[in-house]
Length: 357
Ligand SMILES: Nc1ncnc2c1ncn2[C@@H]1O[C@H](COP(=O)(O)OP(=O)(O)O)[C@@H](O)[C@H]1O
Ligand SMILES: [Mg+2]
Image 1 (cartoon, helix red, strand yellow):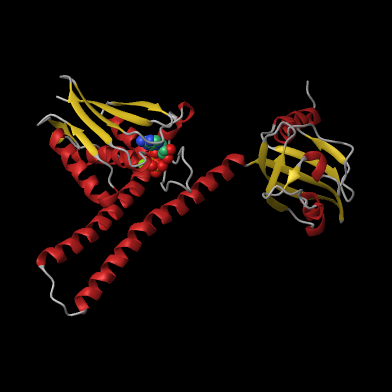
Image 2 (cartoon, helix red, strand yellow; image 1 turned 90 degrees about the vertical axis):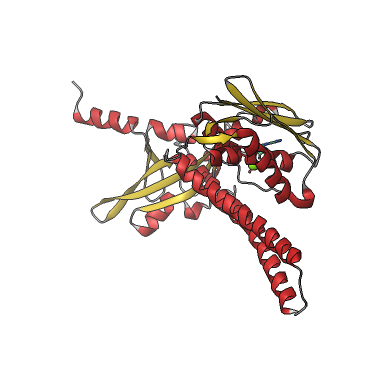
């Protein structure tokens, strides 16, 4: 039979939270459980006391500096004589791993005397990484919004200036201005759809319609629109497609697939020609977009279909890392698949095959 003390010791040792206890006020080691060693990457040290914790355990702040001894959870709990929570600790483990830690330090009292401090350590590495992804996403999304809004604002200001000047304008001129403004508005519209798609996909609320669609016509329309949107920056686009390819699908979602693949080819294609082809073998429609740009390294080929994953430097190429993820979601809901072929440095070809009759 286990006695109560043995049961409590076993439970404490098996808790999924690191527990460490030291004597107050000097900080002599008393107890640590298994999770403590797992988090720290080493067993508890009985040869270190308060004032000397940072170095042996590799305790740092988020900037990578040794954690100030006076700010250690143990010391803060002594001073506060109450539970303190510290969540900016990063353990630089001897195996090279970095672990973000949240520590709850709780003083134990014997009468009025503060006799021990019990610290619970939580591994919050994933939480911190998710926060970082969210912050990066918000800043990338704001940046993406700023570009078309800035262009639109300049365009409208310029139009007002021209119109206020009193000079007469031809119909074609005014239509030209409105069309340029419309391009920026369409870009904003697509961006807001992309942002909405994140929550639609995450909550499984993306539903595909089945309407009559001529895929060949749709492709020609999207190519013309993307070409128009890129204006002077458009690389040569070569399109090879049958006259007609009627079937049933969600035209807006297909439009989104084609738009994403084409805008990637334009963005990462280094201005070189892009070939777009559409074919049908009786069962599957195959759409391929091929560029001769930066290409995709083998190690990145799966990852880039995950949300927020990118394989280029954000300083060189702006983007949210959502395009291919959304393409993948739509295509798999159409019971199709995606094929990727790339020579890093020599371009990428991304093909989408979907059932089509
Ligand atoms: N045609 C392409 N050529 C080279 N790299 C590409 C191409 N298309 C996509 N990628 C890579 O895949 C990543 C994810 O693409 P995507 O999801 O569309 O996001 P974004 O374009 O916003 O970065 C890109 O950041 C880029 O690294
Ligand atoms: Mg993209």
